[in-house]
Image 1 (cartoon, rainbow, N blue to C red):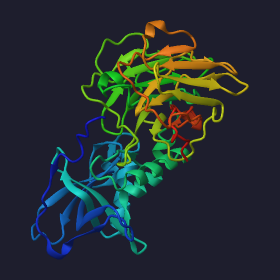
Image 2: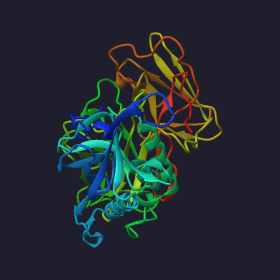
Image 3: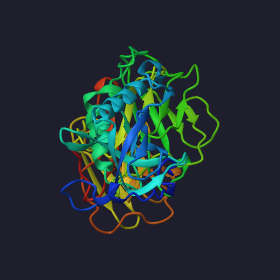
Image 4: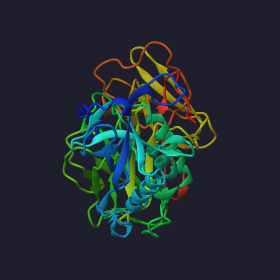
Length: 432
């Protein structure tokens, strides 16, 4: 799991404020997570996820910077009180202007909230920010996510909004709103080339940078993708730009490894010393995304996980997945459809880890592939794969389901890439 440098680095003890501070359920009328609330007056808009405020009732003139919790707008490079002076990444100005509109309409009054009040590494208070609209408090981050102005960045400490933000972001992506519109900045290079992107966030064994990667596939049958100057990122500010001259032949894939290494051919290395992607699947409602932008700043392909909406898969019902939790441990995948199934871009989910399939993993109608948990990969054949695990991985009960579960992967121009996990778990099922 990647370290969250932006969130929850230290506790921030705010000045006592009497009646201006309160606590209660994070969501009105709901039990569960409790939040601390504080009212404030906005003094300036920094960008699409940061404002400055004067805390009401603190009896001081101190101005605090507020970083919105769990959302990430595109970055401004040129700041200004006047809109005409703002500039930066495509979509950055639109996000900042939207925040300004919402706050000005609320007469600069906002409500700040947090489960665990904290600051980030820049000393900014990290909070959810709400404005009064139509007679009730409405969260600004929720509005930005719904309208497609920001990416979701899972919070590992203040988790109350995680699933709501994630769901709203996936719906905005499905509808191609704002930054999810692949041609909103301007008609980009090779706009008609279908592109597929997927990532591995939870490799087998201990999570390390060496185990994480992003793959970009050119789905065109005839046109070479000129990938030089394009860049990928996660929900934080880390990005990698493909060097000039990078090309992807029709049907081919390039791989960006998170760790360090010597780039060459179709293999690139980000050079990071930490993992990038949050793992999904616990009660904190974590997950993440991987994103590919063209040189003009248009978001051209992405993967969001875990899938919460529009999770149907072209292979749904075609595969049967069963597990044998005894020595030798193995999982069998059978194609019970009347058409070939290409498993490249899918991964087998085993006990909280994912095992990706390599190119050429095609099952003909009625065909099977056996994944042996132990053994040596040197013994692999076309229909038998060995993971080489040093211990036992499969629990003894409940592992015999034919269902699959997938992340929400999307490609350019709205094409749907296959969901990228198959599960041998009994509880595994499609989302949506």
